[in-house]
Image (cartoon, rainbow, N blue to C red; front, side, top):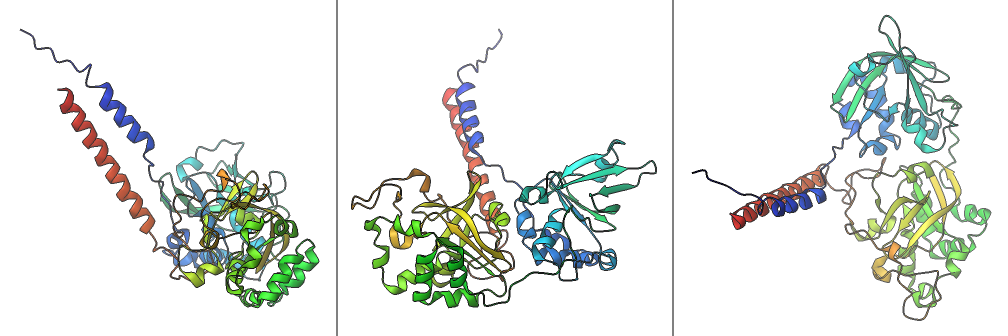
Amino acid sequence: MATIFSVSHFTPLPLLYLLIFLSSYPFPISSFNITALLSSYPDLSDFNNLFTTTAVAADLTTRTSLTLLVVPNAYLRSASTSASSHPSPTNLADVLRYHVLLEYITLSDLRLIPPTGKIVTTLFQTTGRAAANSGTINITVNSSGAVTFHSPTSNATLLSPVKTLPYNISILSLNSLLIPYNIDLTASETRPPLGLNITKALIDGHDFNVAASMLAASGVVSEFEADEGGAGITLFVPTDEAFSDLPSSVRFQSLPADKKAMVLRFHVLHSYYPLGSLESIVNPVQPTLATELNGAGSFTLNISRVNRSVGINTGVLQASVTQTVFDQNPVAIFGVSKVLLPREFFGSNPIDLNEPSDGSGGGAMGTAQPPETALSPEYPPINSPPNHLSTPPGMGNRAAETVGVMRILSVLWCTWICYHQFL
């Protein structure tokens, strides 16, 4: 007599549990430290050094499916457009971004390129500074198999593959730098002298008189100007209207002098970020000068791209960058739509600065909720020395892997329970 085994009551429920768990499981995406990868190749040390002295290395830490075009020392040093002649930092960074293809291309892929060539978008195209489609590169292969990379103003020939991390990054070496259209790498740097008068820059920018007066009265402006060296600084300065829009319940002007100075420090990042870098910032949770005085995880800003602008979330409110007041390495000053209020002083309840104050602390503003996690970034801002604010490299990945293992075990346990329940 045949034995009938029915699974009609068993299959749907555990399968449903399995789908629910797996659909919510955040499969990890590989990340890499490009400077660590290149450090294994001594003949690429000059090119690697260019990455470490610009913000480009940080731009790549969370990107995947890339092709990096590198130039060995011998070719880089002999180039007529040598990068060792102290070019403008912005120009140099954009030239390096032009060598990052937003597509994973291996040697075998190059051999399949049609005679008409292949147009590939570069990281430079994403900055908004590339005229039209000048942030692209055309790759061609001739009848003898030689691979050439074309920009509007220069060409380079493939030397050899350097390294591949499958489907993540491919590194190819070229015999010359590629220069994007309308960028002069030999132009001298227009870097202002250290000791920029920030107060004067704000007054000259108009609509920042309140902020200029507060900076001068508090004395912290001298701290900011002293920090212009090294990695530079980025200031977010509220407009006069932003100060006038503060509800009376916030009592910002009633803060003690030391707390008011801390709020001003909360508006400053200890690294130079031009607008393009802010728009594509790698680590959204950024420490401020106030963080350095109060410890990791405190007085941080969450920076992201919101509605085609740079959004700044303090955990209390959401502000946005409204204009560029000053931007010359090593100082960037941006006007922001609201006074940045830290949750350490003003609590974690969102404040709606668009509604009249009723004495209760303002209405709810759902878009200003702080992120569920406010961990220190895995990598510190570029050009900044390692410090106690930085998470040890790889720690974030190991934590994510641990969580992933636990969730997989939960799936298996749930499936086993359901199986025995319906036997």
